Length: 65
Image (cartoon, rainbow, N blue to C red):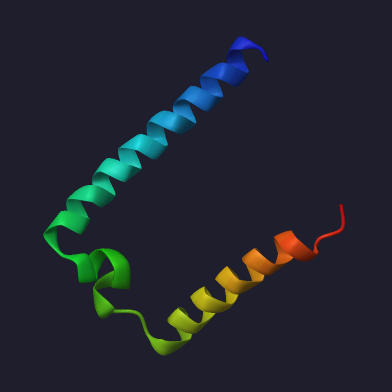
């Protein structure tokens, strides 16, 4: 692993930690806002989200190695 690879990993980790802290502030204000998007999703958006989540989980198990 070269120094550029380490730098990329470090930048990604810093971004992930910062995103976590931003989400933490939203979650502390209101749990519905954090977990349910403030109950503002329409039916088709929620349906696509569930379908893609299921597809992603199944594809890992069924993909040929």
